Image 1: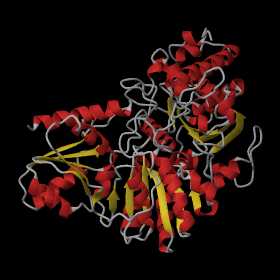
Image 2: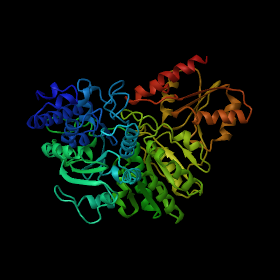
Image 3: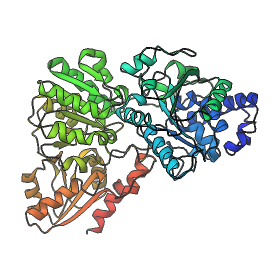
Image 4: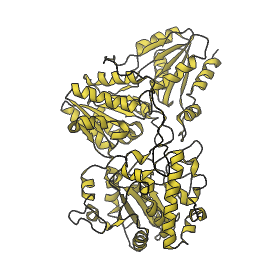
Length: 588
């Protein structure tokens, strides 16, 4: 496609000279440009296709970046990036040293707030609006664009509740497409589903009840209507709410038909949308599927098992249990705090609750983890998907902090399986009945074992295993990163001890005493932040027991790791095979 208009746009000031008809042509070109780049480079597709017209209209009507535009989560911000001076290097999106897949303040003045987790936009935009007023700037506009899945989160309600009693120059735009990554859920979704273009349900309009001026619903793909309503809103004082109805995946037929799959579809043919499937024959299953399929097996045997996920049934593979036992599996929407305390409440009644949360999102429920679960010793089973480095989604999505922050919580058991079989056995062991909560962390992507569906076997809590004995140097690993250590040892001629510790808390002190008595040098390896992590626990054990061994801790350094392929990021973090080999050789 020839991008005759798009190629003339270096920034929003250029598109403000276009006619309404030219804006419509720009929308066609922008949509096709996104499709062609994502088809080849991968990324989040459907969300950005759905807001093409809204993105153009916002930058046409408002004086960005002086007027401040905040995108919630940021899955939908590709068009925004392309129109704000990043078209020529958009092909580097989500690649090492390239553009971030999400809005990022260091990247552009048009990215007013860094995002990646949901439901932050209203609070951030309100903060900007109140600060602008205090600075004497009463003309600046502040716009939050939020989806119907994100607005159901508790933090969004907190922002709306506060904004409604201010006179802030704030515009909240609801991008209503009835889907987040999976279909939206909850009572608010049921209310929104009754809204149609030109018609809003009058009964119980909660937005108006919160003192917002409510406008819409309007057609999010009618750029003329969008420009007209946004021009009107520029001259409306106080907090305003615009309800925009869009279609996720708009403009690519297959993306419209399968909105879940085309949220982030991988590579595909840009003209048809047909997915280019990678050859996965003979490859191990993904860890998330091992979790999901094993949970269904266990739930068949144990009627007390319940599954919970905050809005990630497909990404976590809890969908298998939702299909098999819909009455015992709950998608609670983007509500991590609620998910954890809901699980705690169920546990008080004897339920065996598997609460599946991405590691990075568990950070959002830290207080509930401490106050509602651990303090009461409720045996909730937390399954932390996407633990460790996750790749192209970058700093907002890496699950690097869970080991460190979970170690600090009394009563918590923290485990990390080395492979899919250990994950399966830990899930089995946990549902047999524990007196404490447990967190089981495992990585994104495929495992290392093809035949993982073995008979169930109980694993002893707090016990590690020796993979191989050595002479002077021992490597202590936690979790799936042990595969890098195993690969490294194949390049070392001397016998090196290798231990799969399995549990971060409690540590296997009996095994550690054996290791510290036998070896002069100990290396710890973990796929998490090195400060306060598994290696720190080993150092604490050494100090407490007055051992004087040389200890080298390998893990993610004390900095935020950006986006790139996992092997690239492991090399940057110093936990790749090559670095482990170098560290071992340096000790001889």
